[in-house]
Length: 293
Image (cartoon, rainbow, N blue to C red):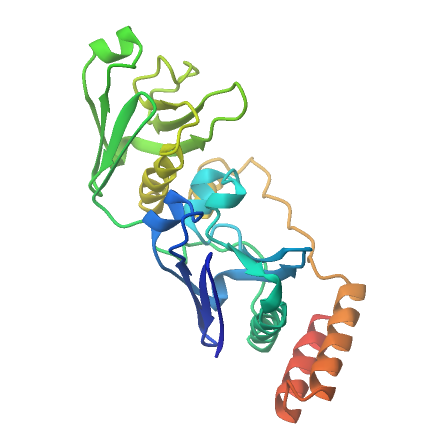
C-alpha cells in the first residue's frame, strides 16, 4: 500500500484502486469538497506523474478517455484548483510522492493496463439527487428529470417561460463551460430534435454562468446527467451502424514509443537495485515492458 497525506488531500493506493480524499484546508475548492472521496480503479488510469517545484510539487493522474463522466462532461476545462486528479505536495514530502508514483506505475505495468479509450464509464459520477444555484438559475437533477428554475437576474424572456423540466430520455448531450475573462460560461442541455445556437443568456435549456464561486458546482450536475446518458463510444458505434458509409475513427498510435519504454526499463532496474522491487516483481515488470516493445 502507498499513501500520501497533505493539506490538499489524501491519496491511498492499495494495488487495485486509488482512494482520493479532498483535504479540509481552506484552499481546497468547493467543487472538490462537494464531490467528496473518489475511488478510481486501476483500470481507469492511463498514467501518473509527479512534478517538483521550488515550494511545492504536484501529483497528477491521467485517466483513460471515457472513464470518468465528470471529465467527459467538462471536456478538460476544469481549472487547476477544481481538478480532483491533482494533489499539491509540500516540498518535504517529495520522496513520498515519488514512491507513490512508482508504486502506481509499477502496478500499471504489472497488470498491463492499456492506455486506449474505454467503452463504458469506470467511475459512477456524482450521486443524486442534487441541486445547484449559480449564475441566472438553479439546476436540479433527481436521476430521471432535470429542473431549471430562474432567478431575478435571468433575462426577461427566458424567465417569463417559467421553470423548465427536461426528461433524461430527451437529453442527447451536456455542455459545461466555465467563465473565462469577459466571456460568460454556461451549463447547457442538448435536447433531442431541438437543436439551438441560441446564446445561453436566452436559451431556456441553459444556465448562464458569470464566474462566481459556485459556478464550478454546475459541473456536478453536468457529470451526474452525463453518467446516465449512453457512453460516447456506444453512441458513436450506433451512428456508424446506422450510417455504414461513415468512416471508422482512426486508431490512435500507442503513446509509449520505443525510447520511453527503454527509459522505463532503466527505471525498473534502478528500483530493483535499490531494493524497492523484489526479484520477482522486477522480472514481472520487465517482462510487461518487453511485451509492449
